[in-house]
Length: 379
Image (tube, rainbow, N blue to C red; front, side):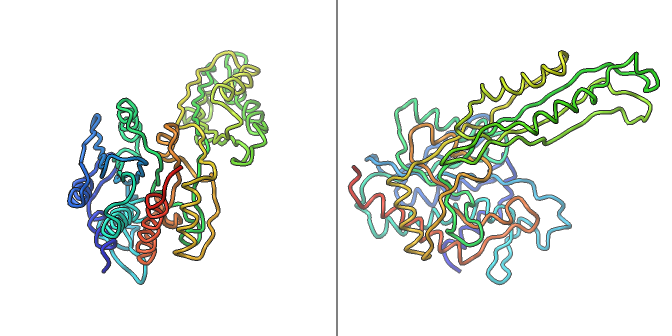
């Protein structure tokens, strides 16, 4: 087995259900310390965070990722135990194989290979690893970035190891992400017997025209980097369970993945206006998950495109699709940031897996990116 596969299996054996790290970072820290990295623990609340850096010169190239994984789901639906990594053919099965312990292993071996070949490289290399990405994301990368910014430690280039590939490894690289905002609406009515409509106020009836307007709204046209903003309902709930009772309230959770053409303030204003047309008795709360960000074509995107093409022969699509990642906390610092990782088809699913071959290919590609960044003069 390859070194990358060995490390991936060692990480996958650890049951690091979010926000638990379960010793993954200790393994990584030991590996990095043996290769000249200074190890610093930045723990906040119950969340472990690792900041490891080799060198003090600029530019600073950072690998970022997370050791926590999502829950397994029903164990009886897995073909093999989710924390007993199993190889079948070219596929390695385990929870976190693609998202994203395979990438973490590839980052480690890429650095090992690069340092062995280029001990006198320019700049510095760092790892920013958290165990709070799949959960609340309150005490992880966002807190580490705040601490780094306070002491003026600036990341110049960053690769997040999220599974970015679509059909084959390297066919897609994320160069940004849309913003994400969640809204929680509670329409308040008056509960009562369905036979006495004059004595009740049905919140479901009031919700119907609001839903129609929100789903028909054209939020923006998008732009060169982002598709148009879209609105989606994620949960709708009302009723008492009885067929002869008008409920006292109706609850709706919704999300907008938004482009840089919109701001959270504008989204809130427009949605509040629509609701106000049909109800004056409601509660509306918001949770902003992240703002849109983009890394323009430049040093990092060129280095990544060149590396992917050299290793795989593929010219990757530069995309801003998909969900959100911890890149949203790093990019605002001014870092050039991309996401590059394995195929994302099985992430968060039963029988999550990653190609064994792709693990080695990913490691080689990461190493090539380091060469393209740190073996040349940065203007």
